[in-house]
Length: 315
Ligand SMILES: NC(=O)c1ccc[n+]([C@@H]2O[C@H](COP(=O)([O-])OP(=O)(O)OC[C@H]3O[C@@H](n4cnc5c(N)ncnc54)[C@H](OP(=O)(O)O)[C@@H]3O)[C@@H](O)[C@H]2O)c1
Image (cartoon, rainbow, N blue to C red; front, side, top):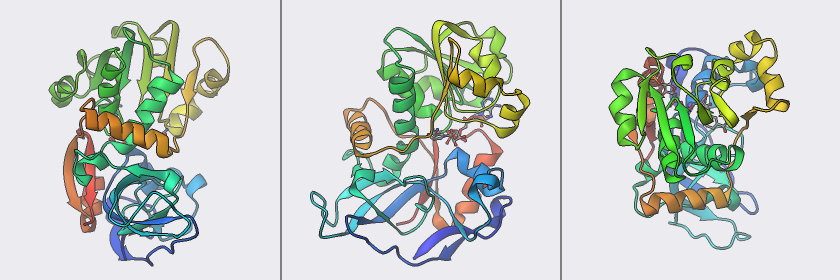
């Protein structure tokens, strides 16, 4: 089958469309014909080799974690799913969804939102599941609270802004100038250019959600008493240069910075699909790229200014 691959760490040019075997469907698994995947911000670091201590030196490597598609085959031990069902999901801590097929356990998928195309739907997966976990489960965001979203125009941030409004918060979105109107359209009460307004000029917040991964110390200072900060990204250099402060703040102290790495399962995926079907959140497709143009998608993300998601269309 066709799949996005790379044989060494490096710039977007290392990516290419190659061939790998169709995954075998093991007991209790379903085979999904992937229609669309996306490029997640963290994958740019992975491809560049910035996480090589964790990702190792075995090549070729695959890309993509989220997928929306149709069930192609169901192992006899699986109930409740049939060939042709429209499903979506996130691979459990491995890459490889930018490909024609993935084999997964049913707990890793749910029915995709019935009101969206699979290309639209896939844009909500990583941002939606991450933002529900961050805002509702980790930060316990309450109606009327002041929420700051950093990286508000990106894949995660663009859904966090919408969910923040759905949970009843007053949302301040940080984005670059050209995207201020865009994040307002998503529902942000205030949109501020992070390039001209520094953290010390922003005021106080009950919850800070960071999708950028830098300057955690400065943003933590914005928390009002009882405030919570959730960081879904971290920059290795920033963590090292903070002299352990950020890691320490994650385990003790009044205003902890909560980090987590999501591994969403069926219930969370189904809940997200419900929000999309109710119209509480909408997908944001920046650009659709064919699988063969995966390098173009990475290049576009590295250029900055993304709105929502770059989608890799396979079918
Ligand atoms: N923990 C988890 O479970 C989890 C799940 C999903 C994603 N993540 C992580 O979340 C991060 C974001 O992912 P994503 O897919 O949303 O990436 P993305 O689509 O590339 O979005 C990143 C956003 O950050 C903004 N940005 C970049 N540099 C900035 C800076 N210095 N100050 C303020 N804003 C800045 C960008 O805006 P401009 O381009 O306009 O500058 C962009 O809107 C990644 O590191 C990813 O690995 C974690």
